[in-house]
Amino acid sequence: MASLTVRQIDEALKQQLRLRAARHGRSVEDEIRNILRDAAGDTETPPGPSPSQRATEPAATAARRVLLIIGGGIAAYKSLDLIRRLKERGIAVRCILTKAAEEFITPLSAGAITGERVFSDLFDPAHEFDVGHIRLAREADLIVVAPATADLMAKMANGLANDLATAVLLAAKAKILLAPAMNPAMWSNRATQRNLAQLTADGVTMIGPNSGEMAESGERGLGRMAEPLEIAASVEGIFKTAGAPQPLQGKRVLITAGPTHEPIDPVRYIANRSSGKQGYAIAQAAAAAGADVTLISGPVNLPKPAGVTVVDVETARDMLDAVERALPADVAIFAAAVADWRVANAGAQKIKKKAGAATPELALAENPDILSTIAHRPSGRPGLVIGFAAETENVEANAKAKLAKKGCDWILANDVSPATGIMGGDNNTIKLVTANGIEPWPPQSKEDAATMLIARIAAALKGDKT
Ligand code: C5P
Image 1 (cartoon, rainbow, N blue to C red):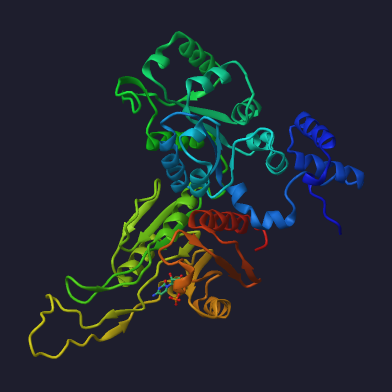
Image 2 (tube, rainbow, N blue to C red; image 1 turned 90 degrees about the horizontal axis):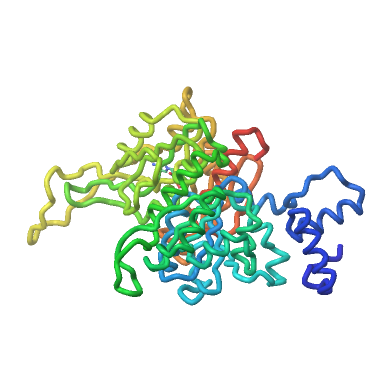
């Protein structure tokens, strides 16, 4: 079948399509789908992503989505940290930069942290087709403006829409959170205070500004943008009270993460290179989806995910104990890189190096396989048991064999040979292996992979076919 992209359509027709899409509150892309559907006489199918898109975009429906509008102020650099803080909480972030914001930070840096395209032009034909301003507004569960400059506040208070940021804000139906940042004199100016009163009356939520040192002038006063952690906490609070999609509400999810440390003596141990990042991201995404999450964690260097019960353990045997104590669970995800062996003859005291003495011999004993133990439980087995298969060769074949051997329902297989950079890195390329086959997922950040997994779990618990 021939394919047509909107970029090939002539400008006058494109303009008509934009107007028509805006009238119907749709993206240009959805408008075209609707026209084609009408022409084909199919009025039943609701507008939405194609099945192939659905397969690769479950995260978009399960995640809470923030559209972050970054205004042009010195505090814009903090917004990059804000993106991180939001993503840590399992919140998907898209960014719009105003032209003035681009004087302070680059779309490249915002794009690298969000992992998404950054938007800035209202009349960019490519963007307007793919993700038009109406769709940008509609696809967000919450719009955050940080920093909100005096200029942006003035435009919003008066309904101006002469750039992408303000057009999106005017088209938005989602709640809006503003984090103002400006010089204290600008903040206390009567015009700004009038705009603030108007915006508050319009239902816009404010966080800050805080009082303190001004970056650009050495002055002190009210006008500093709220700190990224404060804004992120406020976003969480809004989502909790707004009843954002909570597909795992009422479900108990148990997750293991990180390495285990198997002592050789009181100061030395055997371990592996697991950073715990993937398991922690899964815990965060599950909590964001409303689950009651217990994370049994080996020693890692990561902040504790918000809203998650974390049980710290060291050895494989401690981990198994903690897992058994944390049952029952609806879902158990075994992301930990558990050491296969422990030292059977671990020293009670530090083993001393003695000149001329033979090197100490370590006798190894096999550790319990936690995943297999839980998956084979005759009673109290979680309804959905998921393991990982970190392989360096024959990834698919080994993962399939592991699914059968361990008795689990799904295996997330990944190639951890050093060239992939997956072990300890920020990205992951996963293949989901189930009894029904193998589904390759795109390369993505560990946070996005976690969100995708949680969406799949939510669908499975709802009874959708895996
Ligand atoms: O056998 P292998 O280590 O490759 O299996 C990986 C999967 O099994 C992971 O999900 C891991 O968390 C789990 N596992 C476990 N206990 C072990 C070894 C692995 O839970 N002792």
